[in-house]
Length: 190
Image 1 (cartoon, rainbow, N blue to C red):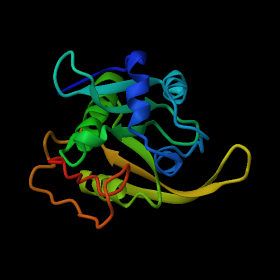
Image 2: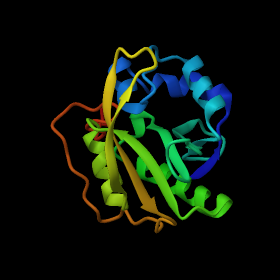
Image 3: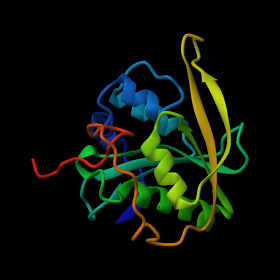
């Protein structure tokens, strides 16, 4: 698997991984109104370092994520981490976060990686706890128009991550159907 700079031509593919506004709200604290390729391109333009994870060279990406230097967070953080629904439950979420952490450490010298996660995103919170992320605090984020607010957790983990440390760690199963930030254990046999 290889982490590469994001190629804008994959924006429609990445947008297709976000099925609806509810999934978008779990992924982005920005309260964007619509899932579209233009939204992904705006994320890419605002990010300091947008990346894609390739399962095989020259294949379409299986995951997307960004490294940013946020104003309200010390150091470097990962955001908008999303995995293609066809590949969820196979460790790609862990892998892209691990690779983003490696880039933050090796390229920029950071000792910690931050993330902000919606308080309702139980699977992401469990995954990050298993990776060694600790909660720094909980806060409310208000949409730019002031109409919506979400509770989020700010998390941080020491870098570098140990490679493949997810092997042998059981992540919680959920009863919910697969979808972004939920089940993620899609029945891929159908």
